[in-house]
Amino acid sequence: MQYYSTNHQAPLADLHKAVVKGLAEDRGLYMPEVIHRLPQEFFDHIADMSFQDIAYNVASAFFGEDVDLDALQEIVYDTLPFDCPVVSVTDRIYSLELFHGPTLAFKDVGARFMARLLQYFIRMDGEEQVNVLVATSGDTGSAVANGFLGVEGIHVYVLYPKGKVSPIQECQFTTLGQNITAIEVDGVFDDCQAMVKSAFMDKELNEHMKLTSANSINVARFLPQAFYYFNAYARMKREGRADQLVMCVPSGNFGNICSALFGHRMGLPIKRFIAANNANDVFYHYLMTGNYEPKASKQTLANAMDVGDPSNFARIYDLFGGSHEQISSLISGATYSDEQIRSTMRACYEATGYMLDPHGACGYRALTEQLEEGETGVFCETAHPAKFKEKVDEILGISIDIPDRLRAFMRGEKQSVAMPNNFDDFKSYLLGRS
Ligand SMILES: *Cc1c(COP(=O)(O)O)cnc(C)c1O
Image (cartoon, rainbow, N blue to C red):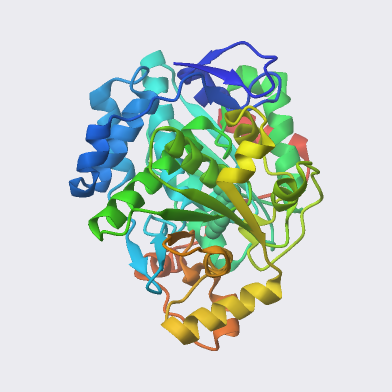
């Protein structure tokens, strides 16, 4: 399969190149030239299949031309040793819990799949060590670090701003050891990102060591999220509730919903989609007006969705040939203030006993407001509420239990390398390690 750039000014790339490079030469995002429809037979049997088998079928349609099928099956099975159940919250609204992976949030699946696919290509090339650099304000670092943990041939450096990451987030990437090094930068997130960018552009550094990113726009990170939606459909079909499904995705950078739209293009019978936003309403505004006007991001309670210029808008726009009419007839929007997020979390907990995290709350609320007669709604609960314990406890007036997996990270010993906010220091450090 060839991949083209959404900016159409870069050469086509094969999967190998698209995964290693992440972004095309013209700064566009890679798109597969063909999106295969899955056969009717697959949908006829989907309700009886395991998550792993469903995912393997979907992965074969995306990657089967470029990856040996036995290896692909192993990668998929290794990525998904857990289920993502669909839980009934009200009689018409279901929560698709995407938080049963290692760091209790949905980015785990893409991160692990990408790590294993990258490893597959590195081995094929007979390359020695590859180094992944990632800057994080919290969640991406933990997903990438855990996804790449123990993957031979790849070393990960996670750069994060000192004192600006919550203790629960910090322990998820600073306590791992092995092939994961946490670098605590004396600066803010933008400084971390600038250091990573400088590293990718530094000639001397790139001659000494092979550097790559694990950015969320990478095709190997975003496409596997489509597995979730096929599995959700299968679970709903088993419940006899799959007829008029509305899928609601709390969105920030729009990678997750974009993968769902790819699933739809592959034949997944979802009637329509809702993109639920916090106060960062650029996509909502686009749906309403047809104009895409990026803004600076605003800080909100649902901070993993604080994005003012969502990268994957380019993919959605391209997928529908730039047609605002097609996009807005399949997807509707919603935008909520922090106050609305709080009141939704309280109302849902009081009425149903279900604990929402601030991101999932946007999804749940959009369904309560927009679901029509005869439709069944499924929203993604993108993270376990305990990941935001301080906020959730305060809003709901409870003390939420911390799952064992999270507790285990908190017991680990913090190991990180202190780094001044200065690229030359970072460069010397990396050169000393190569
Ligand atoms: C990343 C993230 C989102 C937003 O997902 P996108 O793919 O960026 O739209 C929502 N919720 C949580 C908990 C996240 O970590």
